[in-house]
Length: 303
Image (cartoon, rainbow, N blue to C red; front, side, top):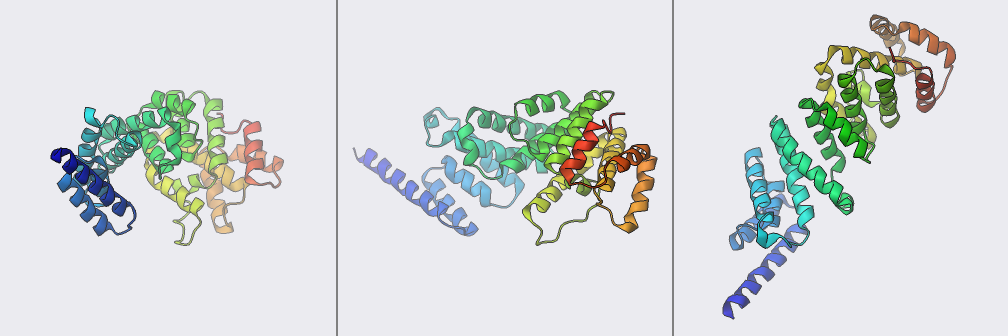
């Protein structure tokens, strides 16, 4: 009986400490509280996750997250409160840590598990932060591993139509069947509809946004930083992609007078000048969506 009372006291104290950790923004305090919990229960998954989130050093973060994963997978924790949410956070964390260390196979393993959890538990989508960034990592890793079929398969079941989804299925379609111009040209227009400015950051045409830029500009730039070097996977794809971006930029007046002639020359070198001449006669003015619709309707970029 005394042992049960002692266990109840320990559990009550851990609950109290966890509440304190969640209520503070102090990194040092969260780490200190996590350490107190781990002294009482060395396998406590929440304390391990909290500490991993705040501590510096990739190796230490990975070590703590792996310990948390082991703890959550123990039979005695099968009914742990919010277990699925914690499993999602741990697998996401490991995917991110291995990604920044260029360990792409390991990153893909944990990213795939996180995506499986998300697909099995739709209710978790509203409870996690950074889902958009995580999805970018997931698709970025698949590009790095040249998993073109998996990218297309995932994009078909993925309901989140974000920039990572659009760009990744575009490059995957091109790499699998570069002769099917109509297919991946339509995917290019889909990408522009979602994020018309992002490709200009990818190609270095637009400079880094100011600190006071809106969230959409910052998101476009951050995506470009993560994905820009994927253009070098294929010089043919890069040339074709650049041609589409410049064509769209010229027709939507995105270049100032000093850049215009240079962009015309670049478009001519990529074989897109005749297309530009044709479309500049058709498109007098219009917003981005109207221009994209006209370019798609006239089957631009299909050859």
